[in-house]
Structures are given as C-alpha cells and as structure tokens.
Image (cartoon, rainbow, N blue to C red):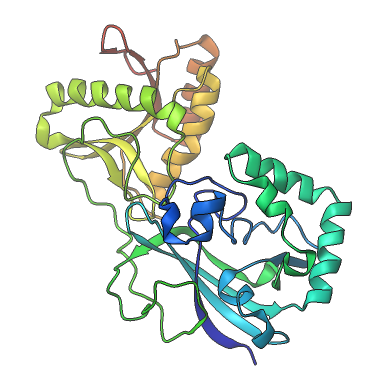
Length: 342
C-alpha cells in the first residue's frame, strides 16, 4: 500500500509542464540553490503528461532524487506544494497517487526513449526559451535523468494552485525533502470579494499563481491604470477595483460594483479584436461562473483594437442565443477614452 508523503517542488508558472524562467525562483547565486545557478528547477516538467512511455509519465523530483537509493522500489502518494521565493507565498498543487521510484537502469532506458522520440530536443529548446543553462541540463547522467513514474490517471491536481499560510502546521519544512504527510494545509477561501482601489505602476500581480508576460505587462497595465481612472470618474473610488481575486487563484483585471451586481472587465492587447475576444471570453466566463455561481451581471472585453462588423454580429449572437452578457469596448490610449459597448 502506498504511503502518504508531502514534498516541495520548484516554482513554476507554466503549471509544471515546461520551464518558466527565473521569476519566483531563488535568485541569489550564493544561496547554493540549484535553480539559482542553472535558471531552472528539477521539477519543471513534473506534470507534463503529454510525454508518456507505456502509459507512464517519468519525471524528476528533488525530494526523492537526492536520496534515490533509499527509495528505489517504493511507491508513494505524494502531495506537492511550491514556494514563490520572490513573494514568499506558499501554494498547494494537489496530489500524485501511486508514484513509483525507478532505478538507474530504467532511468537510462527512459533517457534513450526521450532522445529517440525527440523529446530531449524539445526540452532543450524550452530551456533556451527562458534563458536557462542548457549545457548543465545536457550534462545530467542518463541514470539520473528521472527518478519517479506515475500514470496520468493518478494525478489529483487542483485546477489552480491555492495559497496557504506559511505557519500552517501541516507543512513544517521549507526544504526539498520527502516528509510524512499529516494532513492538508488550510487553503484560502474560494470566494470572490470586491475590494475597491488600484495599485499604481504594477508590473506583475503578486498574489495570483500565474504571472503575466512582462513584454505585454507595460501596455496592459497602462490601459488598466487609465481605464481605472476613467471608471472612477463615473462610479467613484468605492465602486472600482483592479486585480480582484476570484478566490480560485486567478484575478480579474477590473471590477465595477453597481447596486444590482458587478461588471467584470478583461483587458487584452492582442493584434486583432477577434483574438482579444477569443482570449478573454473563456476567462470572463470562468471568473463569473466557475464552478456554478453567478458573480457578474455584465462581462466586458477591452482592447485598443477598433471594432469590426463581424465582431459586433458575433457578440450580439452570443447575447441573443446563449444569454451571455458579453460586450466589447475600445480603449483609446492617446485620448484616454472608452467607446460605447458593442
């Protein structure tokens, strides 16, 4: 019978499916942390279940890999969490059941299989994309390439990582080691609460799991700041808030509070209005209704792109046939104006 364990994994903002760069990782090169020297952590691909060999996903987890010899042949149910070293926030990911520890021979076989299938080259490219040390990764011995395997059906991961308190007694260690699991930590309440206000000049949200692309942040945040000021002039300071937490590990760009409910705004900066609507629609529906609630009376996509006849027809169709209160508004960054709703 598999024993219940808990382990810390490296920070990652791509849901542990590919490397995400240094943001949130230990940056002090004198700390001795592996990621501070290499630009990547051991568990960057921990949940990349697109790569399966005979039904198993193979991965490396430092809590086991650094002492693999004493775990070989064992099977565990491993709950995993991560710490954003920049914000010091702790995030609970969920559990992987029936995790089997593999020996050196099997690791070498899997390394060869990854090479034959072109997966190693893909991993090299992913490391290059985030400026990590590819040569360091290439120097890893095939027998140390992976240390665990599990079946995708045994993943019991949260839809979004959720924060828990650093003093929670369920997690008593900050180190990358394998600990006996006592209980799950107490996770933050999954409720949306409106909080008015805006933090000027932000480059990234600090208390949502997934960061934003820094190249897009500047334009996005400028629009957010200008739009906030514009909406405050209409609804007042107590009626508008930015970066509103959904309670699900995500944030809404802007929320307006009216007497009869809330308006959710999602800002997009893609090159076309079609892509902006496509990208924002799923997010807004999730923010407003996941899993089975109604948190907003109106959903509005905002971007700098001019409206088109086709987009107007599309939004009208969604409202009339699916009763989705979705609208689009153009924000003019030069004039600091917001168009009518389409």
